Amino acid sequence: MSTEYKSIQQIIQSIIKNQKLDEVIERNDLIEKFKDVVGEQIAQQVQIKSFERGILTIEIESAAWKNEIFLLREKIVEKLNQFFGKQVVIKIVIL
Image (cartoon, rainbow, N blue to C red; front, side, top):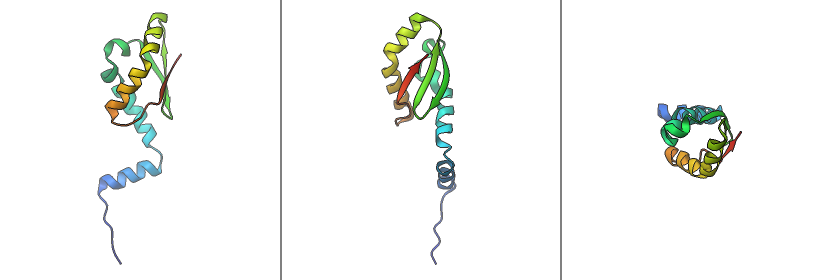
């Protein structure tokens, strides 16, 4: 009988994956780090509405900022994914 030992980190990662908590953790990390990644000026204009299955939905009041961020959305996706070191955000939906 062989016993395979796992580190606490491996056990926690297994629980997170089995309970599908990784998306919840990614969502919280994204909301928490959004301002650091996109900068204060953009972050002040954006209200994050939801983040599910890689789709970040944001609301912007100003028409001018809505247009500006629409043009920057692919670059923002790229910056967020670079920050996290993997594809976390697939696309941004602007309301």
